Length: 491
Picture 1 (cartoon, rainbow, N blue to C red):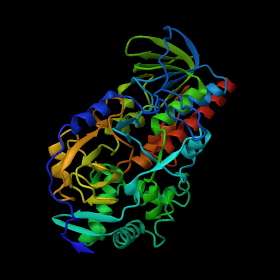
Picture 2 (picture 1 turned 45 degrees about the vertical axis):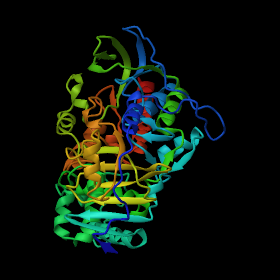
Picture 3 (picture 1 turned 90 degrees about the horizontal axis):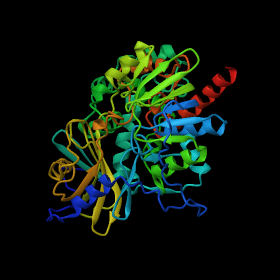
Picture 4 (picture 1 turned 180 degrees about the horizontal axis):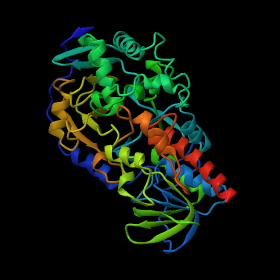
């Protein structure tokens, strides 16, 4: 292990013109599922066309939101014989996922990776015969990380045990590696009293209590900042402990969960799901109001169109819930967490650099503007990286700003182009993935999942298992479709 040595890159002149090409690719909005094949050689469905539905039309179920929770719920309801309408505010489905491209390489601007420890999404990939590809940097050869003013470099075989040991100590609040706190990760109420012992504790609180040496602190702080997508003071310790329980507290397995991507793209999976169910889909149809009446629920779009149903499934992100008017008003606890928002507010971008650096990973402790970055693609004309950072510290649309940030970890690097999507600025997401603030899991999870009359709620943000992940969204949509079917069947 060496300190303050660069991994061998030198300053080069910029390649001009590629930046605009990358930005144009992202802005074009063309998901890469068109013309792709599944593992059996069958064409993957294109995105759904928006159906013109007359105002006043009655359905059995209306699903609000076309992310993976909404897509799964709409498909499952339709396949159970329920007349189903999905209303999506954007001009596409997929929610906080979107597949674009840079030249010959497919980019995921939102949710990206899957793993077989995530049973719901893995089942969907198998169901539709989709393929897998790997991110090159998920198994890097070298690691560079920054802690304060110090930069460390090392072979992964030497550096990773430092992180794994630090994470084990971070989780070990019970002498059992944290295992007694969440013995059943999918059952939030099984050890409620044990969880409450750590209510209010932030990731930073735990870090401050342990006082790691700089070498270890740089690694674990970067990891925690990336996972909560914000300052570690904003992330709940118990939320992280529960996440680690899903991978049996194995840091290597958690890293592996950022290895596998869907060959046909996340948009390819989204299109496969909605095509299977054949629910009616209306795009560019934001919802303004949801009104419960005695025998039906009326949903009004911002354009003034009204549709009614025996039941409604609301799948919008928790940060967006507050923007829809409900009559009668929602449980105040739902609105409280929506107004407060969850922690995930950071940045993700792709960076094409001039240098060829192989399979590499870099980390920077908070408040470094880039907290984690790794090789996404080894190219003939350099390297494509994916990078993450906390909110307010990185302008992903400014190549010079990204280059300056990246040089804190990779001195002398030259940025050719950069692109990403600002999910925090999108009114229909208002943030990235869900990671609860201290106190939110204990106080908000149950209310967010609880139906109100004929209105049901599903989201990755309230999943019991892989909360904040695509798997959690599918879990939530599957559960809620079953509940709605039983509810309408009884009626």
